[in-house]
Amino acid sequence: AFACGAGAASHVFGQSATVIARRRPRIVHVMSFDSPWRWTDGQFAGFKEGLGEPSAEYRVFQMDVKRNSGREAKERMGREARALIDSWRPDLVYTSDDDAQDFVTRHYANKPLPFVFSGVNKHPKEHGIEGVSNVTGVLEHEHFVESIRLLQSLVPTAQRIAVISDTGPHWTPVIDRIRRAMDRLPGVSLVAVDQVKTFEAYQRRMNEYPQMADGVVHLGIFALAGADGANVSYQQVQQWVVEHSRLPDVSFWIDRIHFGTLASVTVSEREQGVAAGRLARAILVDGKRADSLPILPTVKGSPAISLARAHKLGISVTSTLLLSVDVVK
Image (cartoon, rainbow, N blue to C red; front, side):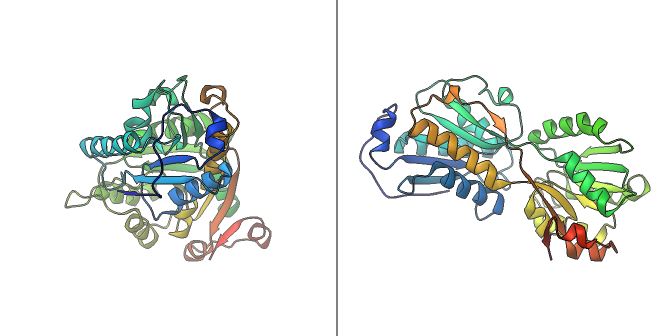
């Protein structure tokens, strides 16, 4: 579950930034998901870049909630992550995505050990970490309006939009933000918002959408149970969509484009990590208190198009658009 860095001398929480700056800082990274995966790996690489301390020692714990999706499994992984933190006694903990906040970060609220997070969809209050003295981080806010406008540049008639997701609780605030953003898209209507538990229900709903929608927004596709009860991999879900759906679609992450989603103004995993790394540097090197560093979302998005998916759907992409987006061939 975790990869270890080199061993080091004993450590006491709460050492000054000056002491930490004179030696190799020790950092535990708890990722909600797993590696290798572009989203998690990109955040971690960005964090190291933003921290700017190449000598730092890391231990990485993977909660792997795509497979450990039940409450009991998440609690077990959270206990194991906390055991690593308590035994290795790092200078700082970097946690990515929502489940790590629920099952790790909140247990250390207002304690001396500083925490920095990234990739969080829920409001910090929902994780029990709003306003605590030792936690700061970076929120993940999707670029919904920009993604729909990109979709309409490809398919001008895409005005009726359906949203579909698994039932992960961290998708609820995303759906809320989508609903609130609709007034910025005149002429566009939200005709369906569905959260389903099984892959079969997902397939059934996708097959119904062409009668009511011109385009689809895919959110969570990690926790869709197959016939055997185990989660179907998101790559399998996307393969089914590419083979069976003729509706143009968007999502918010670049890996989805590589697996066949048509378009996205993506949330940059690198920008999420870099921003978190800079917060960690402010704490470890500059001696800032975590609660003096505001919790904000990253704002930079990158437009991307799957050219293969466009061709499969019979969509012509203008040369002007091709020159202004990341084209996945």
